[in-house]
Every structure is written in C-alpha cells, then in structure tokens.
Length: 251
View 1: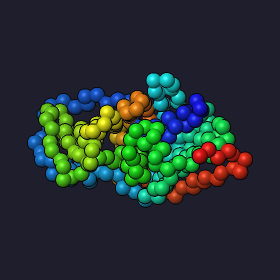
View 2: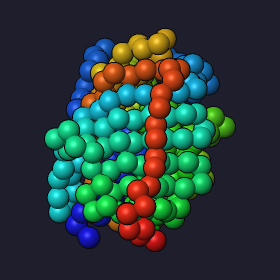
View 3: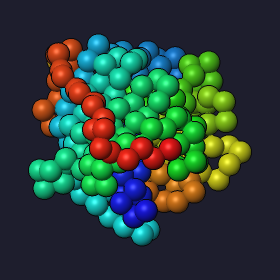
C-alpha cells in the first residue's frame, strides 16, 4: 500500500502540474485597467498547441512522506497525457491519461492499475476533467469564466477574481500580464488549491512558466515543486503504453 500511495502522489504532482514559491517580484504602481482588458491579455497568453513534450524534476511532500523523481511529459491535445516517472534513472511508473481513463503501470510492484476519474475524486477530493489536467500542465487558467470576472486591489500586481460553478479563482498577474499565482477555493467544501508560477520564458512563441509550486489542501495536504526543462511544442513524440501480461491487474 505504501508503494501504491507513492504512485498516487506522483500522479497528483504531475497532473497538478507545479517550483520555487514566487514572492514580490515587482515594485511601483501598475497601470489602471479593466477586467475585460485583463481577460484579453490572459487569453492572448494561453498556451495553445497540438503537442507538448518536456522533462521535469519533481519533489513531492505530504504530512507522511516525501519523494523526488524525474519525469517525461507528453501531451497530444484533447486526447492524451503520457507520463514516464523515474527514480535514479529507473522507470518506476508509466501513466496514460485520456478523456475517459487514467491507467498506471506500476513498475515497482509489476501491477497494471486502470482507473476512471472517480480515482482523482476519491484520492484527492477534487473534481477534475481531462481538460483541467491538460490546462494545469500547460499553465492555463482553471475555474475561469470571462462572464464572472471582477477586479481586486493591489499596487504591485493585477488581481482578478473568476468563478466557475462552485470554484472561485483569485488570479495574481505580473505587470506584464503573466500569471504568478492562482488560488482556487471550493465555496461549498473545505478544500483549496494554490498554484505559483515563476521562471517564465518565451518558448516557441509561447509564454511558459518553467518553475511551479503547488499546494493542495483537500482531504490531505500535498505540496509539489516542479522544474521544467527541454520544453517543446508541436513536435512529434512517441509515447508507448504496453501492459506486460505478467503484470497483476489491480481493479
């Protein structure tokens, strides 16, 4: 069970897409603006691509354990998220996520673990779709509905409040309109998700945060730090997912 818990924590860290916590990066007053103008800037900077590939260094910690590993991440828009997770260069798990399923090859225990999205709800007390997971990795906003936007107050950052269903998202933007933080609260349940973004670089014409920090406070508290490298957009990749017939199926 401990090894399975490790695999669950790894999956959570990657799908929540997550490094060094951002502090005050700017001083001075920002220019007056409107919620509609900020919405346009955010939408202009959304990462759109047919494919995405990257490497990452990941540190995951909870109240009971901590783990470090490296990952290869591949996305085919709206159809596939593929993860290969390694410890000391040895693959410990491979994960295939589609709009309908989450499948895990647990190399450590030689197990095949097929799940649906109830798996995320049961494990982390969060309702997430494939699109949500895709946006989390790419750094696009979540719980975001342009019809609900209101401005917050700050002299150093742009603050924008958005809401979608039971979730309220407070976004903090830099003076050049990059997302620095998203704080997402469930208005009816005791759970929240904080995403911090830093290390922005322009890659393939897209603004991408290489460093992420995430804190999930739901049923348990989980923190992850991720540092991306070798980021590529719209390049072919080969992600294989073959179940060894000797592996035990865990339903």
